[in-house]
Length: 420
Image 1 (cartoon, helix red, strand yellow):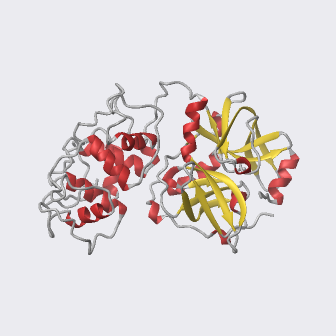
Image 2 (cartoon, rainbow, N blue to C red):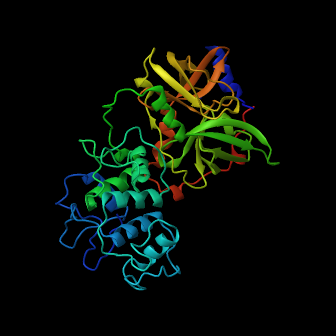
Image 3 (cartoon, rainbow, N blue to C red):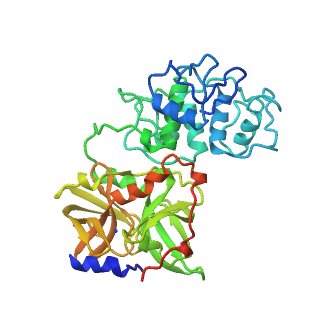
């Protein structure tokens, strides 16, 4: 059941890399790294967060290769996991007291990395781009399928699905010739770019759309980032169901009215995996938008948000959601019009579309044929369908850019205003 507040209904009628101290390597976070030109902003960002540091001579060594133990230490410290009192992983070449021992032991325990053999970790071994992709994808449970394949990454290779996941998250775009070069050694500069892009969407590259606009079949791949949201009351009875989609920092965007009145909610992915939602990170009940935090990262790639200013009347669009519980249904249409609804409280930018929106669709994305979210499916009036401009989701997200997922604070569903 979907509900809407009086104010909103009124205006509708008027026409929603840790490099710590390696002996003498540590330098202060204010080091300017004069040897860094490429990916400088990413490197300085990670340096300021204490994730990477430079050498004693003030340089960063951007093209220096990364050792296996160093990579594990970087990731584990960013994850802020407790590495004390860990079980011995049994590696003969890495013992208690060695640099990175605790981090490697913890990473091995939780399955982020394994030894080259049962008894050998090879801490000083150099990582390839493929190996680093596997470690990063496992560390952050990254999932997803990309629109295109790198021509030098075989589908049957061990790293294929992990590289696909990184590409789906726009952490890597490969090289201009369409290759990924999986066997090349990963260097400090490349790692910094990968890590910074994961932690902050501002560092993600603009992807040249050389393949042209998406086909409907390609648009359907975005269902991996769309979820069904089920809301329950204090008796654990289902009282409302809607849709949502993954945005920055693994948060889920939806309509506020989808969660109003509930005390518990879960998100169900296209593959049927269920995630408890720990609460609401931010919301605006007037604009009918909310950001929800899963108890753990879903690992699904975030959808890109476009501005209301980019929307053109007549352009083709696709609406995704779970109308009447039919999960991740897709409907195509055009933008019929752009509107600003106003009442005595404020105004809301809305997109009118011929793409079908009905009960259960609320909270799902309305996307242009470049795969960008231009609106959040919100309501219908008779045969007319409307989506609230995605700008409002962007505004809610801005304060949380670069904030560690585990540090995101939430308010309980029960504490939210109830929309009648």
